[in-house]
Image 1 (cartoon, helix red, strand yellow):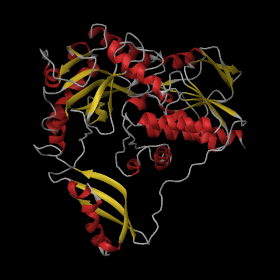
Image 2 (cartoon, rainbow, N blue to C red; image 1 turned 180 degrees about the vertical axis):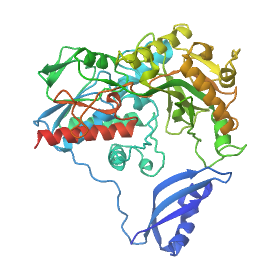
Image 3 (cartoon, rainbow, N blue to C red; image 1 turned 30 degrees about the vertical axis):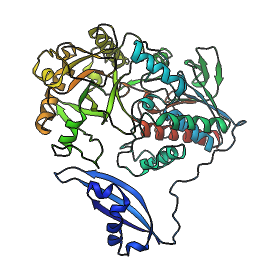
Image 4 (tube, one colour; image 1 turned 45 degrees about the vertical axis):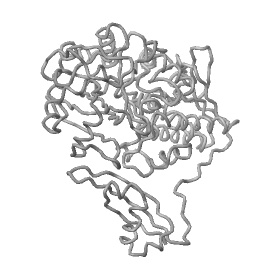
Length: 518
């Protein structure tokens, strides 16, 4: 019978089973020679003190015991002739909604404004090289959504919303490394995730579903208080109930809903900058060693939070060993985001550093439900002007920003379009800049070495989440006004990140299937 034990190991011991095998045998009370296989179950780093430990849970199979495969078999039946359901958006919410619909014997018709991952890569290269932004194919729009080319981090706190393990298992079924089932903070990587997304698309197509690229939805068709289908920019019309999974950057969709008097409501979101340090410095800080992470530890991450004048200031979407990327979704805007490849092996560490923005913080917000959307856009356009109307990022050294000094020079950066020195502390809205400065001062006291001129702030990090929620019934997931409309994922204001969006997609699909099939 398999035996599970918890081990507390040094980084070297945790690096290979040949090192921890005898320790596992001792903990299990068996001879090392009796071990047939060891399977890692959960792994986390404890870096709270100068001595770094790895907590590793393993399952030991003795010689002759059959090793059980933890990955379930996913069954996707032929739904070619089944009842169709329209899914607007091929991000994690839309794709996982499609997979669940197939499991429930319904036919998903996925409509994606952008391109497939292969073609999308070429458009991303044009953004970096020529500063040309395709409004439908960029870091925000296209197959897989924003997460495909911004890191593929899978950690979530949304464990009460659905089965996180099932989402990770489905990703493994479609080609992700099984290590994501083990690591406390799982991560696929921008270099690996596109292939996983392509495999999910192939599963949908092989089961008889449909996926249409370069198909931007421009209208919902309505009959009294029910949605009957969608109209697209290319002239196509699709009929059926709609799962709306457009992501938080689809401003034209929010505007369309508002025009039709479909209920929207403002909600809190966050905006700020992206902060970048040398990864070696973050390793030294987090691992309490001038030698950094050494041979056996991974690139260090951090998670910082503070309360400043009644608003949260916090790090967001931290990318160890990563790059800053240009994430605007329209010409005339400047937006930055972060990404890491699976190896997390660049020389830089970056993270969003953002301030909570509540609806009441915005002028005119009591009269205008789209005030948050307009505030985002206006700041992005201002940032573009500060960069000389290019996709260079306006930037300032960290300590200079806090102390109100001009950065006469800028450090080397991972941001390929380049940086231009700018006084962020002067032109950013006061309610953001003064809280960022106070927050950074606090973080500098809490984390020695974090507040440094060896690092840089770039503007602006504005797409952390949607400033709007599309309200739905808590039990049925249907819009509170209109039947056959299922707002879903980050764009609807009910998720944040790949896994929570995928869970929300599954939940919406399950609720819709329960209604159609009863």
